[in-house]
Image (tube, rainbow, N blue to C red; front, side, top):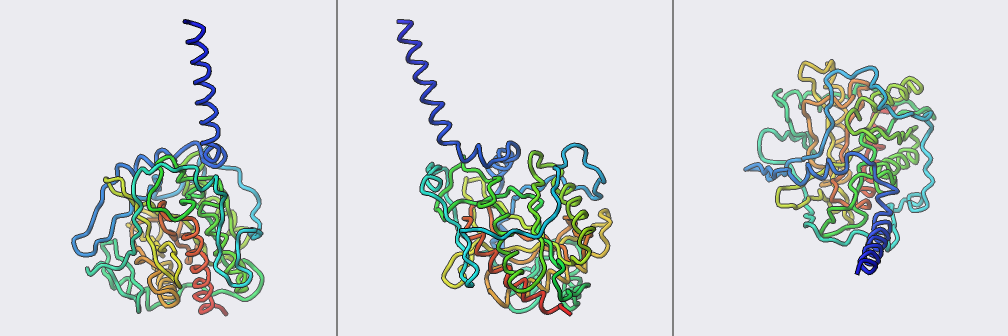
Length: 383
């Protein structure tokens, strides 16, 4: 009996190993070894927090422990960063030359690699609530005041011009970068998600980097000098991402002092304790786009960031332009006590494109729309 027993075990081991290699090919190639499990665990344990009057679901996106004052050196965790170069926009899957909205494609094998139905995906359009927390800054544009400051601070910023102007020429004026570079999306629009599908990936064709590519292309087509930095700041260590992106920003700004605007492109993560995931969505010209949320930080007295209203003025300008160009595309902009490296320029903002339940094409389409509105907004403050 022993030989047969050992034969059976060997066959089982070979079968399991082969299946594991095939089914996990995408993960092995694309997923950072750290933080994907951490984020999934947090999402699974998150609580649904519905406001009584506005039905806005709380965002449970994980942020690393952002320090009030950033350290100058972050030990050995810092990734080696290549020399900054203007973005290379060659992507065979993008269709922007003729003004057509972009599409990202994947093979059937990639699309069907994670078939398990672990929970529903709910597409939801987020609007401003009815409380005084939501400040209307013009037409369909709103800012959500999440600070203890009076709404007049937002109103004053909305009535102010940004603290910078753009100059004509070929010099870079805008920096696109990513603190959480590996944040990724579903490969296609789905009604369910697979728990083992990677929500963080080094594959730039399914991450926020691909969204940054579209924004970059739109600015270049508008004649605005832009740099898209794709340095990975959240792998192998998630903690300290903002320290590392701070150093990347400083390096780029020192090399290109002409840069006035720096946009940190992220994606959100929204879920509840029932195992449901939410995809912020807007239908623009008959096609689904992930909703966009601009975040402008505010100093609580500990961040050494006294000029936060300058960034807020730019956030208001951009939010108004988006509301004018594509009503319903944005969630209310968020004004809250966060730093997010926004003291480095008066035009630094964090922008969330959808959530982990959105498809990459919904996010890329939103990036394309955002890029066009950003170019329109910047044209109003160009010399």
